[in-house]
Length: 187
Image (tube, rainbow, N blue to C red; front, side, top):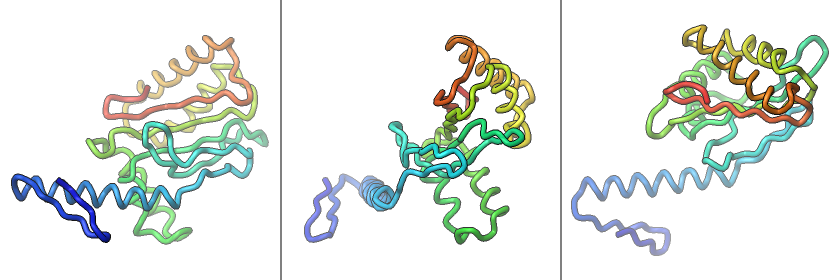
């Protein structure tokens, strides 16, 4: 049993191990509540697209950016991940050690487990494009960052083409794609 009195937490459990687990869970909940209180949505500057601070399934906004092709802003993209991925950035001061911070974030976002089962990418189209064109642009952007088989990127391209074909063949302004990355792959 957990009771709170004057900001003190009292834990009563059948054994010491259970008590320690309950205390850790309470500490994590308090820590995440404090983080959530500070989180804000972000607006991608070049496109004006806004991304929520947290997705309905509990993933947190890590950052956002834009995909440009020549002078055209094709889509805005946001990365969402678990608190573990956000914690990977904690040792790096804002704007400093960019390369090291990117490596730490990439490694944390790719480490799937119970506390971090999914990393998601949300893309919002800001320019109309054919399914094959947008699939190629996304694949081109993913290839250098993806550590798996080249066939995985081809599978992603096919999923995008099929999805856009089901919506009339074109991804228009405002079309939203979401890619959930897990240990099993992308869905």
